[in-house]
Length: 116
View 1 (tube, rainbow, N blue to C red):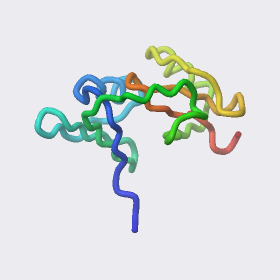
View 2: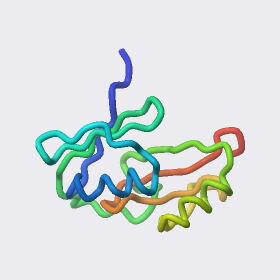
View 3: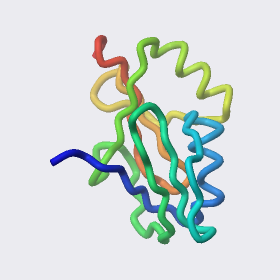
View 4: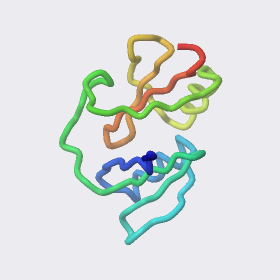
């Protein structure tokens, strides 16, 4: 068994795709039926699916699932993402594990896997 793709539920996939493309650097692979957005970064495929998010989790530690993004230069990546309008929302037990959400409240963590 292998991991296929990750499905992220967002209110408006066509609107949310801009965050994933412009801020996080994913490429748009396909848009199906004007509502399902396929994205890719490296070997990771994500499908943005429409659904209203009724769960508004206030911090990374309270979420049911978090997506962890790796970087080999945390400071440089933080500057790049901040310049694109990303607001970090805290840390996960270490100043080297930065957390943020997408516009729909899905939680992410940014770390250098060799330095945390």
